[in-house]
Image (tube, rainbow, N blue to C red; front, side, top):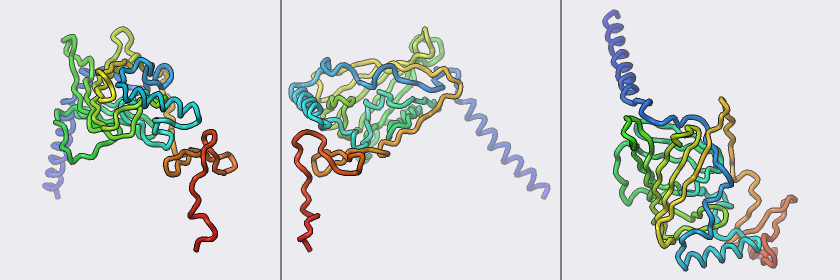
Length: 275
């Protein structure tokens, strides 16, 4: 019994040593302090849609989308059915964001549909073609020390392997249907104000005539214990898509048109004469 106790103690000490050693290997002081709750500044819009360097084809798609929205439709914005916004739209930060840095992965956590992201920083390569695309895509990043002071200043990220449909924001600003977009980011704190975070985002997409770069700005919530809200898109969603048409559910629970002169859905299977 005594020998078993000694062996067990040695095994436990070895296990604790491995845990402590692993913790020491991750020198948190080398990384920027990204703790807390980050909130967007301004409305959740990507940028001025008129400034987007769209190709002629996708400019025409965008203009047709605006006309449809003006008439009561949803245009090319797919999220009204509760589809995830996907990248890069999630960086509009519809709900506050938490950033968790670990040695192998940096997590961007947002409780809005499926906006959370994993950015792998463990030196891995891109996955093979057998990996299913996702709305958030596959993100690989690495930390850089830009001023040579021994501390990391920025997280450089590249995201690929995306699926759609996706748009930049609720204006319906479209991305190419081929889903071959590559999105590059530089995420960093303001050196003069550590409570300000920037994400410099460059989108390379076949719907654009050139790479398009914008910078998102976020502010750290000063509250010690901020509230984290939950957003469930499917809850109280009054949109009903039948075939290719979007209808609306009234407060009384009746199906109603979403735009003027919209035809009713095909009710052939509700015909009482059928047996």
